[in-house]
Image 1: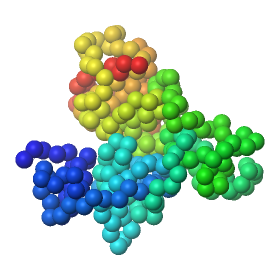
Image 2: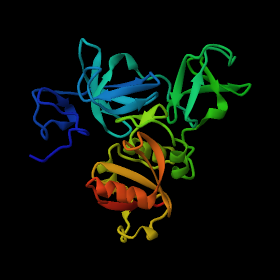
Image 3: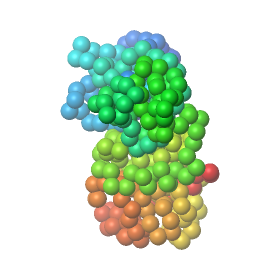
Image 4: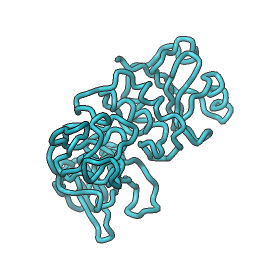
Amino acid sequence: MPDFDPRLTPARADLAAKRLEGTVPAARYVEGSVLEVIAPTAPLRREPRPDAALDTEALKGERVTVYDANEEGWSWGQLATDGYVGWLPSAALAPPGPAPTDKVAALRTLVFPGPSIKLPPLEALPLGATLAVAHVKDRMAVTASGAYLPAAHLVPLDSHEPDFVAVAERFVGVPYLWGGKTALGLDCSGLVQVALTASGIACPRDSDMQEAALGERVAAAGDFSDWQRGDLVFWKGHVAIVRDRMSLLHANAFHMAVAIEPLADALARISAAGSDVTSVRRIAR
């Protein structure tokens, strides 16, 4: 029996996705139902309880295939964007609405119940959230549900940022949050995923997945004079972005924030803590 990554495989001893029948053992198999994230963000946790570890966050507009739901208000499923599997609050999900047309390009934007910015906001949406815009009037985008938000904070779904490092730089100072991927808090691989996604580059969620899937290995990994802006530096359980030949950008638990750190200092500090660079990956852009 092949090994399956439980983070990416919708299978438990009692239940699995129908498409896995014959390859993964389970007591029963179900087709699942596609739902949409309707909350600004939805925590995806390892277990169906609010104090369980946060593995990642789903953003408004994301599709989720749900295979199970319990009476305590949790749904177990798989995200369509990066394939992550876990438990989400059922209240954050609903049947899909109109297909998204736009995505949030600001770190955060506010959604209003009417055309005036003096009205109390309904919610705040993070960078990368998607929504269906019906039309634009007086610099306000009007969604299919009748909500209003600044049109300047949105771009079409097929619009991509030219420099993912510049996207990541906008998060400097944001608190470190394990499993987070918004301007309220994010972790090292969340920062990389959000920045690359904004630039139109598909990116797995966790650093080990990113190291295995992204770019090409830089031959001179031990000589950082050869590293370039946008190279990804990996350690076991950590990833950083080369900002220039002198500095790294990363969300890290040492600073408890997204920080720009002198490259040599970061390498020495992390090595002294017992972790050496495992690889450097260069993404074609």
